[in-house]
Length: 127
Image (cartoon, rainbow, N blue to C red; front, side):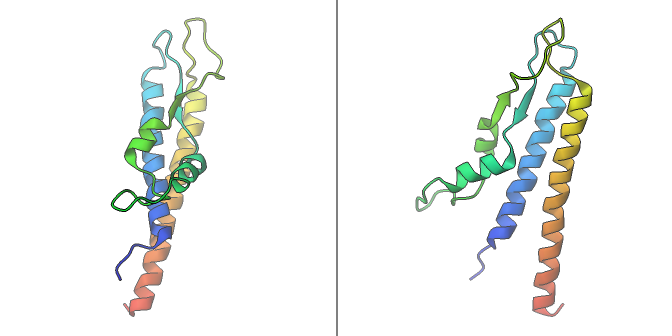
């Protein structure tokens, strides 16, 4: 009776993905001067969510379509296409700032969905 709507679960997963991505990007920025450091990033949310949704339902386990924290850690990958500096570091602060803005926008989108659905639920309950 009190099952969470799928749209709320998806918004939660989107916000969790954006937060995890901000953490990975912050690590890139922190290692911008580390010789040999290779830039890392998360797989896009759509790919992570699609992979979670294609997992068959097993009673008592995480529901399909739910992005678990462990799957976000597994989604971290090195960006081998990024050009390297002479010291082998592939982090550029401009690219990291751009990706950070994308992650912030994704998080803001998830919050907007939460707010909209909360408004709909309040209107439904007459509050």
